[in-house]
Amino acid sequence: MQRYIVRRVGEAVLALFALSIIIFLMVRLTGDPALLMLPPDAGADALEDIRHSMGLDKPLVAQYGLFIRDYATGSFGDSLRSKTPVSDLIKDRLPNSLKLVGAAAVIVLLISIPLGVLSAVYKGTWIDTLATGFAVLGQAIPVFWLGILMIQLFTVKLGWLPSSGMGGLDHYVMPAFALGFFTVAAIQRLLRSSMLEAMDSEYIKLARIKGLSEFRVVWKHALRNSLISVITLGGIYIAILITLGILVEVVFAWPGMGRLMFQGIVFRDFPVVQAVVLISAGIVIFSSLVVDIAYAYLDPRIRLQ
Amino acid sequence: MAKVIDTAAIQPGKAKSWPKIFAAIKAAPFIPLSIIVVFVLAAILADLVTFHDAYQVSLRDRLIPPFWQDGGSLSHPLGTDPLGRDVLTRIIYGARISIIIAGAALAFGGGFGTLVGLTAGYYGGKIDTILMRFADITLAFPLILFAILLVMVLGPSMMNVIIAITLVLWARYARVIRGEVLGLMQRDFIARARVSGASDWRIMMRHLLPNVMPTLIVLLTLQVGWVIIVEASLSFLGAGIPPPTPAWGGMLAEGREYVSTAWWVTTAPGVAIMLVVLAFNLCGDWLREKLDPKQRSI
Image (cartoon, rainbow over all chains, first blue to last red; front, side, top):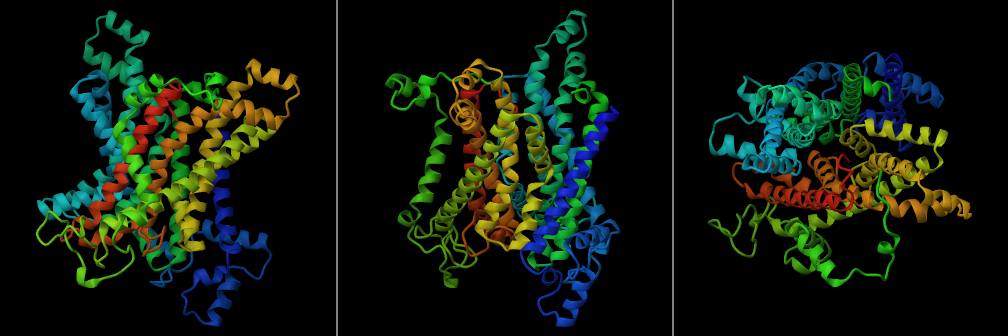
């Protein structure tokens, strides 16, 4: 177990290191990074200042050291547009994004697990057809169009739900569902096939012979083993929710990191975009690390590989 | 472990008998295949099948509804966008953009990834460890985030979108192909090829590559839809194909403010993306069943 954790943490650190190197080099090799960090109308003095504070007059290795130090201490520079430190902007927005991803995760679990189990138990019936059709569709609809469609139906036509911003629970319904849709489809598909495999296995036959109720056989014994295949990919699902969250936040004007980044793209506000990308990528890498370790803890077969 | 292909079946010139081909056509997913054919034809023949200019702004004609609604006409079957451009024309030219990006990204990313996978699996040892470490690190990157940053630095353009997707895409191919090759390396025909003096390159290209082909084809088909969605997402965020080029994601973004008054501006590109992605996913699933029933998890 310890060896596994060490290896996995090492991988995550390497990934973060590689990401920082790529961003660092990308910015420096393709032009003057000082120009990216300042508005186009900045004077020569301001350019000189930023060049000095980024250490652009120093050797590359020293520049990288400064880059890492700034990020480790949370100084991401100032937003070109609002002139405020990027770290303040992110402090305001990050909790909102996490709330949205959390709400979506709850919806995903509540829908995909029953759907996956039922489509396996009632294989070949209309329930299966419906659930599988839903899954196939879910993987083909772009999440931002789904959001727009929902706004057209529930806000414009029916007037049931608010289409933008944060507020009460009703503000969560559409964004969280739109965000979770793709993942629901993916988990339903995976769970269906692993449930079918489990239902065919010896231990399920044994459970039936023992005279357990069908309900316990399906929802306890078969589901428990099938969920392993879903948990294995848990890190990937979290990564998907976080990246798709950016698109959903833009559609529903959700005041989170994704919307912050979108505004950054529109106004060519490089410090903001860079910070949001690095922080989101860090969250993705970290959460898949946690999922993998938790999973290895639960299933010895993984850590012994 | 993948099954080894009967070499006679992959040799050119020895076509299957007609009844067999006919049976295969009948069993193929007809609707998804026809969607793909229409999509490809639209992309190739865009100049011939459209009657409007995809770029010509005409504010007099802005936001004309589709032909079946009041005020619509057959000269703009799917209506016009907020700048008065014909929506159908832009959808058709958008198909061209999507296909160029998906084709280029999959050719470069898939080609490079396959080469890495063959090399890693064939040589094994340190080379394998190093190459796979790179692949794992790449797979850990959230693609859309990485692409956004790259496009911010390099500037939005078709080339940069292709570069960004390629840089992340190769890793999946490297991983899957390497897994296949590891299985094949245990087999007699590789040892025999070695004994008969075949070079490393020849073994990789003539003996390993044909055997990983089914997996490769399935993976490529399944990822067309994914690349199209990623490109549309980037364009939607303004970090992809810059306007006024008619990219489907960008069209959705341009119509977003008009959802309550002009539903067709966003619905047309949305439906186009969904249909094409759906068609490629269904064909990929079908090919997977056909070619490689054991590889269900890729």
